[in-house]
Image (cartoon, rainbow, N blue to C red):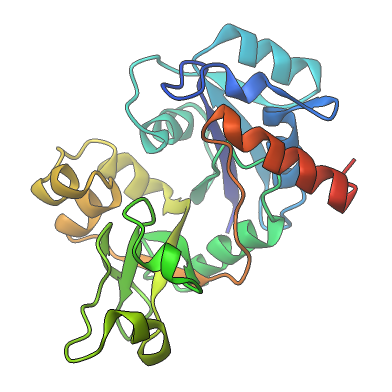
Length: 250
């Protein structure tokens, strides 16, 4: 299977405008994401998808592949779908978060491995929840799995509810999973889901993957033991800088 890695990158972030171009120890964030992604052995190619000329030129400058996309996309999935229309020959596309400069290439390989099952339409990652802070944090989407290791629901609420168990004991009584926001799509599936109307579940939870479940698509899940470190706001930059220095990332 020939798999394309796409890194959506837009300049006009609400919480942190211009963050793909911030300097992280001598390299822009988008360059660090790109270089980490290139280490994923499952990918045949990597492309940055952007609607901003400054990001486009920055990627060209460090020698990366980049495509200009429309400026009216509401999600990374839609941006990936445009790239998939512009390039051919790929069986699947992996949507890689552009704000995770230290992304583990093995996580990309895990998502790609989900397509070894020919029935997989969409793939993503989950990680076991280890702390009560995460378990009850509405900003941490939880994932319910079926016996085929497919996601059957995502929620900001803590699910499932454990009847007759004190909330302070939930982690001891059940394995809960949180969502790690990297997606893979079969190329024909990506074309279809990018045209779906927003559903009631997505409107309620603010999670686009519920649109796919609501329309009957399966989401295969791989389990990772590695956490991610994203830059959502300026306050997150120092955490990443410290990680780069501690890990001696070049």
